[in-house]
Image (tube, rainbow, N blue to C red):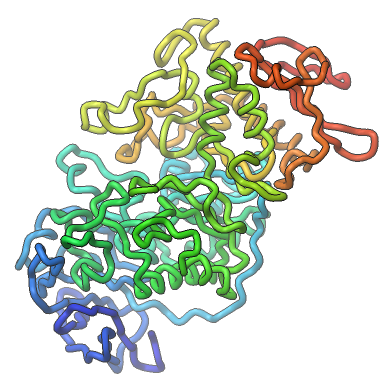
Length: 599
């Protein structure tokens, strides 16, 4: 904290014997002992200010078997850092005891004091379209974005980018992780890097590669998008850190107090409810305060809300607790109470699948929607009833007057939408794990040919299937989510776990996009906007369900294995209604003098 012509440094460590502040001026390091007050260590340094580079060193016992990782040779990043002077780089020396890492670890930068202004209300409201995107993947090949700006957050404020988002009716962009991360240690030997960012080190510090302009760049981009009527939702990883398992690097929280910041089993081993080697201890007030501070920091920049990766970790004690303190703290916080909160409601720990269990004012990723929509359009038997339930908000999962579902058919994790209709098997060989990684069951199909094809019949079938999937999404009640590029048929070549492909596999090919499919998606978005009854999160009280021949659906029709479709009619003003016709058989029909192709 900057106070006049001095800076106050403070960090929490319960087990450390002592902490040292390290100030950097070029290659010169000045070490300043910190005073202890309970578990908090602090010092005020005069005659320095914003822009000062710094880190910490922690002193204490090195006994990994007991969960103690103190090593004063390790330079540690402040968990509360908001800007860094460089990116994290994987290096085996970061995990070796006694090797000094000051030259290997980025330094935190003392931030300038920002004027405190009230956070504007969110632009996004439930029922809108969320557009999930990876900053680099979305902009690296965008022809209208200047080359020097590609791959950065600032590129999202480019007029051509905003125009595309507006044309598609996007209510909010959901940015995949933008805080600084480190590559998993197995990637550099394979010549790969982490493209997604789900391996952060500290929760607030923006990745300097994505945001070379720092906090100001994010704030300006958020403002530009808000001015265009588009909110910003950040994908946050509050479940683990890039310090990984016992063989991982010591970069920040592990070195400061491993037993405080991470969850451990009774015998002292790291709990791995995340599949990444460690689990943040959200039940510890110190960790919870760090999470809340991060949310406040981004909310103050104008961010609409947050999507929480592996969200059950937020409420583990050790089992999932729907009354966990962090939920109440968010609801009571003046800066956070009106922000949009979205849970990915599963992790890999015991009882980790918690769809429908989050607070009533949270939205949740709905994987049952994804799976049932895919099953129906793949041609699975007896799926009409399940599809109808998903189409109208999943009342079986979200009881009450309104749905909290985020309906999606494809996301970053898994096949791109075009690959759902072109591949039955994953093709992840480029990831260097002998095609063992990624989901093995994708509920996908290929129209008779695996992967690329020049067969006109195969291509026509795939085009129809893509249109059917997009139309189903845009006809779905409540909030929907589209993965960037799926509106024009982006492909990852069958890779359903492209986290390590920071290359054209994940870089959207704007020049090669399917413009006809894009126009179709734009028309769907316009129709949805013109008929709010489709997006209204409240469950329909007066829906009419008809067979494809116009007769009312019966219980037997819903349960029949061969029911290939139905019609949903919803009132849309006096004397008007909107019809959603689901039909697996391709045919032409005439509705109110408008000819449509229904699949």
